[in-house]
Length: 480
Picture (cartoon, rainbow, N blue to C red):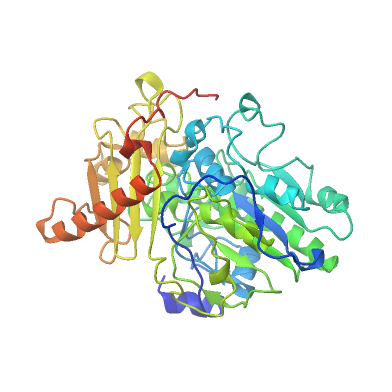
């Protein structure tokens, strides 16, 4: 979608986030930046959908899915079209959000069904120590085993049955921080639910890396149905806050944890796997109707929430707060330094390859290019055939497997499930769907050399064991 159309759809504008400038020394705890009166500190309502990918919202141009809540947040707040998760897998993505650190620094927490060591501090605990009332509904950190590493509760906070019960438990005068971790739109899907809800396949947009056939269109519709359910549930929470007179000073953020669960989506470093719908609303401090072109990592949420609460982000956080960009009145590119984002992946499911090993990847995304480094190109990226376990089972995957010898499907099957070279480079200006690898094209040699060096520099600064040596991601216990 062209930026001017986004501006028209959302209102106008800009805000964003980018990479940190290296690693800082380990800190002991949050420092108060100022001493705000309790009623000056914002409430925080964070909604994270499960496997909700770009651009499946009305405000981002999808013609079928109905997302009035997200669209309202974007219209009355700030829309971030360049937001990406740190890793396209639930556990490492959520660990990075909670700690403000890249997933490769989280030891076993860098894998799906891993174990996050208790030594890593998380923003809900830090906010609670500063006087916030914190809570969690549905899916928090995970999947994984939090108890084995000493967590007395889910790292995202104490569980509540619903938002009404949590809201009723907030002491008068206390700010709150609530994590709404929807289970939608994770597979499996209820067959026929989308049709019953009035969703029709005619206007479904099928990206060019998937076969445009009725089975795939229906699968996308069933995914849309669950996207709508998540949007509706957050809308009910917002209505409760509005009735209680608390909406003005509540910072609301809505996004997903990784891309949609379709081939070449979730677990991949292409936009279909890492790019997220993202919008934030805070009328008391944030000018609405703005669209932001800066790149943002979901790991930037922890330092941003802390700073919004008057706390200094921890020194060990590799992410950077984007509060200053959020509270500015600017549109377009706000911070020139926020011109890229780094993403990556280690082990997803534990049964996809012999020895339960993963598929280590790192990537850097800029406005112009996507560069991917595949550390083990001899392995199958989606898991060994025929199971392809790192791609969620569903009608679209089944159709592509069943028709992989069809001349129209074969090249798409290869894009999603075939082995990949050690380096991939995509010209996102000419190839927005990232389907033509130009890493071996001499015309792109200089561009590849520069972005590869920039990626390695960042990985070195943030102490990625894949660069420094000693990576143990294939050895950490799989708790699923």
